[in-house]
Image (cartoon, rainbow, N blue to C red; front, side, top):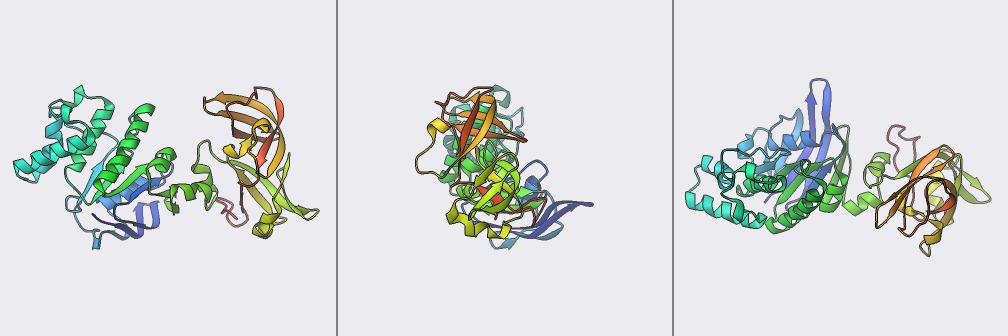
Length: 369
């Protein structure tokens, strides 16, 4: 078992900077997920750790060992890719055993490891089959099994669920989480799917444009994003954003958002004095916008007039696509809501849960106030 450390790691491809000054400490036995949009540098960071890319600056450590100049085969890591990369002419058993045979491991030890891994993954009855006889989920389990038999210090996963259908992704997510608990090994997992990140990770590292944006637990990322990018990326549907200005009226702080305004609770005024009379971006999550008939008790409620543009019935909830002036936004409301296309109504903003971002400090990616 081992920790993993990136110290001031840069990776350049000619003039293109893929990873910028990455500093990241991953604890022993942690399940860390690198998440971000395509091209953000997450897979490049993983490949630098695996030794598949040479870093331009900085150092990568596995445990106490700097591995910059260590060959990939000697880093004691195992990697699971998006493509299953199974040998089609070999049985499941031989696919899982192949790497161990190359290392000239004794036959009885190979047999023990393969059968033990197959049992962990629930594929004992598939060992004599060929890959063409397996479903997508079974092939992915074989690819994971091929990594497990090596008993490495660190497991690396590069978008391993991308080729699976939606139902199978949910099932395999749970299997990987269970596997991590059983193996008690360090997992580093790359994905662009924030749902995968939220459901599996011990901690999440959010990346964008080669930069680490925030490193935290899933719940803290959701509740306390440090900037506009993280706030918009974590959560589905995404947080709603409104450009506006904060001003004072009759002793209260009011966020003027153009076609409507909301009053900031008085107990929070001191937090936002730095952006008084300045441009702001107001953010609120869809689940904090309620149908007026089903407002939770005890919240700081602010009515906002809207027109219903689209409704999406999800069974356990309803998504309402709403319009107010130039603003279009989404509410996630109680499934008993009777709102329908074309209705005009007053939804309720929960002003206990909102975020204000300061574009004056960074117009491209405003930090939270």
